[in-house]
Amino acid sequence: MADTNANAPNKTGFKLDVQALGPILALVALIVIGALLNPDFLASKNITNVLSRSSFIGIIAVGMTFVITAGGLDLSVGSMTAFIAGIMIMVMNALLPGLGAGWFVILIGMGTGLLVGALAGAANGFLITRMSIEAFIVTLGSMVIFRSLVTWLADGGTISLNFSIGSLYEPVYYGGLFGIRWPIIVFAVVAIIGEIAMRHTTYGRHCSAIGSNEQVARFSAVHVQRVRMTTYVVLGILVGLASVLYVPRLGSASNSTGTLWELETIAAVIIGGTLLSGGFGRVWGTVVGVLILGLIDNILNLTDLVSPYLNGAIQGLIIILAVVLQRARKTSR
Image 1 (cartoon, one colour):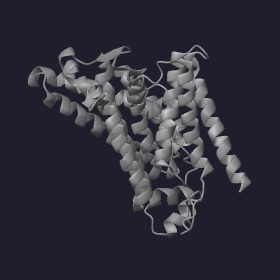
Image 2: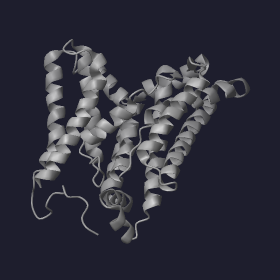
Image 3: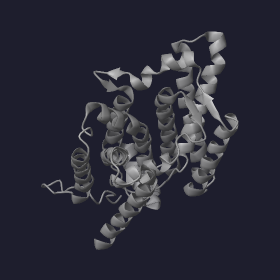
Image 4: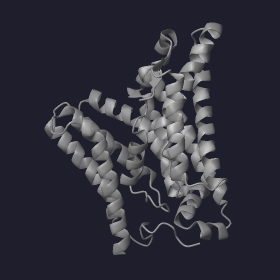
């Protein structure tokens, strides 16, 4: 099977990967700009808040990296997060009268979030792999379904976690280890595992092979449907994990929860160097992309240069620019 990683460095000598260096330089430039524009930018409290809020997108983006590398796409992750968060809260509230406010109820809620995420991802994957429906169509449809379901469950309002459970659950977001909040730690662990899986496992190589040329992958004895199905299930589990960490932050879910998260997730993956057309993925690049988007949002909030309401527009432009640059590199080879 042909080498699917056309951007890999020459093993016989050092080779500067300009494409990989670009996002890192952009991240460094943003840090410098942020520090110059506002003295509070590099304050530990601000950095912690940026990393904590970026962790939700980051955890999901790691899963999205594998989906896109294998030639797929998922537009439903933001709506899926809202739906999972709503189900988690309803389950914990329902168990409270019988089991009392304790960690057992919270653990059941967490397990429910991971299970619902896995099932939602499996549903998307089944329709895409077994029913042969385009990923764009399936996930666009499920995006609307999940958003409508959480709106229905909330009766057009908000699903709120009982205070007695919420106060006990809060440390999952606000607590941490050695001053580092749990969402940041979980994001780091997920990113490390994702990078190892992408670079050093058969599964990662198969994702790249499928995204590069599905027919060649089939002839090379790669179980295309199984691998692609797995990418959606793993993504669903990671959406569930992000929801587990998100619920204690606000203790509620509504139809506005996770809005535009699919845009931020895809933007982070593309900024990091993963090809939107599939065939090549870079998990550590996705992490850099997540940090870039988080810093842009933070700089807009700390300064008056551009309205923070234009953040979505800026992210959309970044996606378009990143894809244009990817195509320009392809045509120049």
